[in-house]
Structure formats: structure tokens, C-alpha cells
Image (cartoon, rainbow, N blue to C red; front, side, top):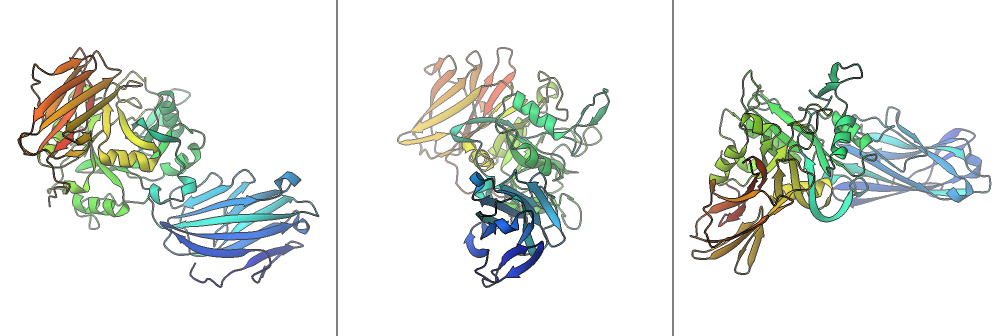
Length: 510
């Protein structure tokens, strides 16, 4: 709101509404709190306004992607009850009664009892219903209204970004799954295949003990509205906004934003994959390549990574190293990942179940959480999880266990690195590697150097669940990542690399 003088109050007498000048009932103050602009509205509701409706106007600027309202009032101990609603320029947008203190509406999602959709510029109103206030009581209300121009979760008001759990930890999740909002199907009550509700996917994740999931339906944003409803109920499972950008030349995970992204690669508006990736970068989204080594054509239309022109890999953050069911058909993304690493592209290896049926047997491939992406993050929030992925502090549990974790550190003189980190080591520098396979002691630990299994010297120690070895730097660029295989040779876990003598600047290709 640009006009600081447009401060108005609202008074309701005998059911008639009229605007009063500043000083009557509501005052409005504007301030900048990047990345959102917020205003504060304050006013009083008195006993003679019992059983009336009060409209408190405010101006909404153009170009918004989200409007969020918080509302608090006094005198509840005297049985004052105020119901809360929101009206846009056309009419009622929310009506929550008295059970909510926070309302949010955006282009794609909204608080239950609110409608998502376009956010027209102009005069909106807070709608206050007064079912009860005593004659001799005056209740003071305070409303904070936040205007957000971005679809990034990290740009939402803090009241919408409260972490589900605080403190650093290894958090377990699934970054790739589908529901009724694209091609997810499951059996209904009579056993027929029908579009599978989002609730069943989240419930399956909760049953598996996952800390986070990303619902990644194909190209659509409609699932976000359901997620906004489910998140308060599932207060132990973080629901990360995501989608699978499905093109004719490859599929990509898009995480962390609710903004629309034009996916039509080959069209006039999106002529090539690089244009799509640059548009995703403008949104601030995290992009990963999904199942890059999957077949394409009629077997799986557009599933493999087959862009017509070279892609600037600096615009991509991650690659799906393990996709649900990979062990059955040999389409791991690991060879593709290794190739990109050898070409100098630092891509974080992640996993995704690619689940399409939330009711599938948890023991079967592609069940929710199989594989599990395990991220070391500062807290359980969308921003922290995505930051952990960007940092490469990730391992993939291909066995979908409830608690396996793979860690690796490298020590050179006074410098120390963990998975995802860079470490500078001049020639003849000795580096001590330590790999730990937690809750996988019976597995075999390997160390991969530049795509090849490192020949571990006989002098190295291989304790149960731990590998310690040394390596002498030649001064050139290398990468090392850990891996654990079960007694039958099946992949159990794979970790992200530590990068030796790499530049901090990503390698770009045109």
C-alpha cells in the first residue's frame, strides 16, 4: 500500500457500515519486512456491536502471489467471541468462524475455508463477525497482513514457516511421488483403480516414519491446496511443495516453490531445456534430474534424459541416483551421476520412490519411502531440507530401512570436510578418510574415486560399520563418495562426494 494517508477505521451501528476517519476504531501502519511487505491493522469492537459484521478495509497491491492474515483479540476471558473472514474485491474469500488465527490465500493454495486463486489488486476487507460481546466490554484486535510476491516457501511469512522440529539431525524423506493430482492410482472400496487421494500418500509416509516428503505430481500445482489442509494434522511429516516437470526429453523434480513454471519444452515460449531451467532459476526453485537412465519412447514416454541440445548443468542442483524399483531393471542413475561428476558438475545425489500407489505393499519397490533420501539439516523445515540438499549433505538409503545413515569425513592438516564439501589439498598432502555405516554394520563399505572403486591399502582399518583409510593428493581434481552393499551385493546406501581441489565456481556448459 503506497498511500500512507489512507488510514481508515470501520464502525458498525445497527447493521450499517461506514468508514470513519483516522482515530476512530482502526489504525493502519505500513512497514517493509523483506521478502514480504506487511501492514498492521488495529481496532476496537464494543458491546453495542454484538451480533453484527464489521468490515476492516485494506489495500492489496498488484502482482502478489500470496496474502496472509494473522488475527488476535482481547477479552476472551469475558466470553468475547470474534469470527474471522476475508473478502477480496469480488466478495467472500474466507470464512473460518472463530477456530483460526491465521489465514493465507495464494494462486495455488489456501487455508481450509479459504479459496485459492487470483489475488486482485484493490480494496479487500477483513470480515469480523461478532457472535458475542458483553455490553460493557471493549475488545481490542490486532491484524497483521503480509503481501508476498514470490512463490518460494522461504519467502512466505515466518508464521507459515515454523519448523516441525528444531535442531540439526539426519532427516529422512522421499522426494518423488504421485497422487490423484496426476497419475497416482489405488484401489477404491470396491477394488477398482481410481485416482489416489493425497491423504493416503501422506499417511503412508507417516506410517513409514518419514520426516519429510515432496508431492511431485506432473506439471501441476493443484496438490498444494490439499497439502495446506493436511500439514497441521500431519505435524511430524513436513510436506514440501514439489512437482515433476515432465517434458518429452526428460523429467525434473522442482522443489520449494508454488509458482507456475511453463513446462512446454519445444514450444515458442519454452524453446529448449535451458530456457526452462533458467525460468526455474528465476523462481528460486531447486531442480533435480529424475531417473536419467530410464528408457524413453513408448516404454516410458520422455522418462530418460534426452535433451536435443547440450544443457547447462550449472542450472541443476541434484540428480536422482536411485529411483524406486531401480534394482529390478538396472536403471540406476548412478552412471549418469558419475559422468556428470567426472565432467566437473557438482550434483547432489538424491533418491525418490516415484510412488504411484500409496496403498502398495511397503515391502515392494516403489513404495513410499523406498528409497529414502536422508538429509543433514539444521531443522525440519522446507528451507533447511533444501539447503541441506544444495550443500550435498545427503545419503540415499536404497534399502528403505527406518534408521540407516551413511557418513563420511575427510581430514587434511587443519581442514575437515563432510559429504558435499570442498577440500583443497596440494600435492603430497595426506588425507584421512573416515566412513561410517550406521545400523548397517554387516554391510561392505567401499570408497569410490572418480567413478572407480578405490583399492583400499592393507594398512587401512575396516572395523564393523567403519572404514578408515588414507589417500595422498596429487594436486589434481578428484571426488570421493562412500557406498555400502549388503552381503548379497545389493546396494544398501550411497553417499555424496567430498570434492578434492575443485573450484567453488560451477562448471557451466551452453
